[in-house]
Image (cartoon, rainbow, N blue to C red):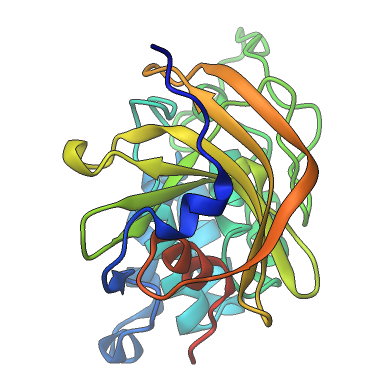
Amino acid sequence: MPRALPSPLRLGLLMLGGASLAGCAGYASDYWKPKNELIAAQLVRFGMSGDAGKCVEGKLTETLTVWELRQLSDLASRLQPGGNNPAAFGPRDFLYVASLVEDADVKPKTEAAVTGCGLDPTGAAASVASPDAPPSPTSTPSTAPIAATPPRSNPAPLAGAEPLWVNLGAAATGQGIAVDATSVTRGPSWRQAWFRLLNSDQGNVVGDIGYLLRIDCPARTITAHSGRKYAPGGALTEQKDYDKPEGPMGIEKGTVIEVAYHALCDDPR
């Protein structure tokens, strides 16, 4: 029998236990090390290496605080290739991750660094050229498809763009939650995105149930607008848009929803 979409009213009760989200709070040791050490490795993972990567690294360490670099680095490290995600990442994906950082100025500063260093902010991994390789005089422009416009401060999923599932962490029971970085929108006091539960018995494998949730940060509530079901390979098989949004519902302590709340709303400096 096909598995039906569960009521979002049950979402906050799926898993109880102390929530954990490693890496969202700053580390005291970060303030004693060179700032570039916080972000350099992640830039390479997102196709920014060589001179261009060093350029982006320099601009980010000049414009972002230690706390902002820590948030950006930790969130970037949670985006893993393969499975339901692309096999490799590019600057476009890095900018989507930047949109998850609590401080709203991180996204535009990161985009300014990428474009200021001559990289295409809409570039996926396949369209990122090695900055160390000199251009060939006989080379022809790449025919690889790229997004028509760069992601905005409130990015909406680009047409045909693959979702980027960032593992936000897990409750003590092992149940985890991931967010599609391409779907995040933000207002003065709220964040909205598609979330999926992680299969606790399969490591970081994204589960088959998802929800479009709006999180009211000051009120500590969520409202569910839609539900989805996915095939094991990541294909969308069912979507239900609720005629009337369900909520607002209080965020229960110790649940994966609290994990999502802390990841997108906290600024514990």
